Amino acid sequence: MVSDAFEDSEQLDYYEIHPDGSYDLLAQMRSCRGGCSDPVETVTRRNVDAIIVSGISPNSLMRFCNAGVRVFEADDPSVRNVIESFVAGDLKEIGMNRFAALGKAR
Image 1 (cartoon, rainbow, N blue to C red):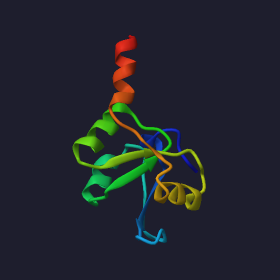
Image 2: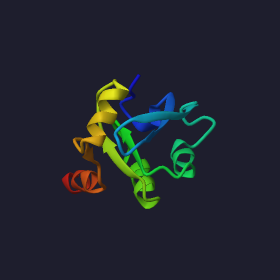
Image 3: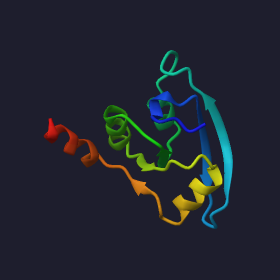
Image 4: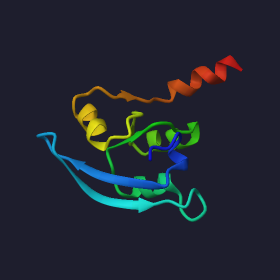
């Protein structure tokens, strides 16, 4: 299942993407929706380069940006499709400017 927001994810999957576009599942972590762990800290402690989400809060995005983790957006529930899109450079990177525009509209 793909959650609408990163913070609501029930499971986090970690993949290593190889230069040839192939990938391996490295680990899975079940989340208890904020009740027992901080998913942002869990991800950043694994020294990942990028995450792919279907949605994310401004706070989590800022924390990832500050940790040097690039955040990309995809809404396809197929891992294969998402990774292929990532490798092809077809996913949009989310930056803090997305939320800056919202703050100005208020």
